[in-house]
Picture 1 (cartoon, helix red, strand yellow):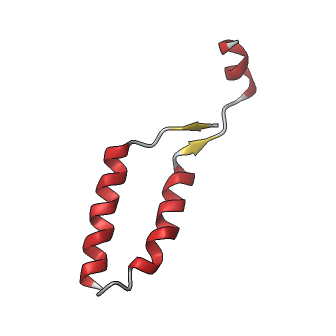
Picture 2: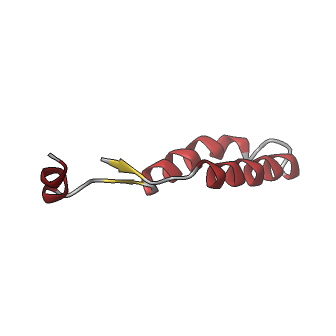
Length: 56
């Protein structure tokens, strides 16, 4: 498996989520955990077998 997410992109998401939580008086905070899991899943990819063999 390979992860291609960047910390700066995640920081931008955290800032956006915090602003949304302030605007909605904390209600959006219920969805932040789900959004974070979706972001991690979006940036995680399964490598193909031939790519693994090339590195050996």
